[in-house]
Image (cartoon, rainbow, N blue to C red):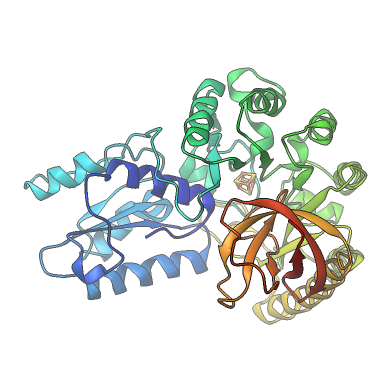
Length: 428
Ligand code: SF4
């Protein structure tokens, strides 16, 4: 079972590949070995991970092995070992290639705490045509609210050769749509002497026959160059997709949050991205960080309501040990934080609705995902440029959809929009 972000999902897929010899089951009560890849990013994720561990323990059969891997165990291994005797094996992040050996050792009576080695093999889950590809691990930034660098370590870029090899292998398995991810993707290569590593990556991936569409997620403002924006704008393979979490918009908050770039420079990038034809802009904001005044919050609301971003994700500030924000005074009280988050969410919902309605009448390139979770007579599709799961789905409500297969590329004319999704007719 995999919790948390897509980076965690890749680690889970690496582990799955190492356990290929075992038969997979979704039935916890039948499993001899249960592996949970946990998330420890914020309080809510920690709580979800711990609740999942406890419910897996309750449902497991006697004699089975409960393995907990991932961020939560990396971050709180000692505490968890003391608090959760239900767990048989704790492992950390990053190096999963020895999960099979570790389980074997435990089953044959060895007790060991080992952090696993990374493998290049994966069993991709969730799609027959799209795969996430991790390009780096760790982060060199010092964002006030984030504990990730404290447990994932400094930026460690994967070599271009290794990335290309993985993409080629996935293409050979039938995958053609890729999302490249890291904690701070725009810093890719800086630790291995490549100032504009992402441009080199784009050029290498463009040469791989069989890659039909790709996008890069998680651009950090201060390491995103205008040359990168230009290169993405001119690429025939990479979508003009800009996922740039700004976290806030006021100069004082950007400084307090140690984001490395002020409002003017951040919005100069946003403007340049917006000017790229057919660009899609995503951002994320944190509401209620220590030091956020009413005026800072109003400035944030103004940007959300302006609709300059196609998609906005919002998070309430989560106080994390080991971060600089943890020791900051001038805190926003819980009631104010809740009210601000609610207001921001309402504005984001209205802006999103307006943005989606603007697609009505347009013809969009799509790739068929399969039967919709909403209704068996609806087929779900993804805009070819957009990312799965986080961007709006396109539901096809034709009566004649029986022949559509996952991975099929075509065009859809948008006929309607809900709060979260687009509805359209498949044109072929
Ligand atoms: S860029 Fe900031 S928020 Fe993202 S992982 Fe690095 S420190 Fe955390």
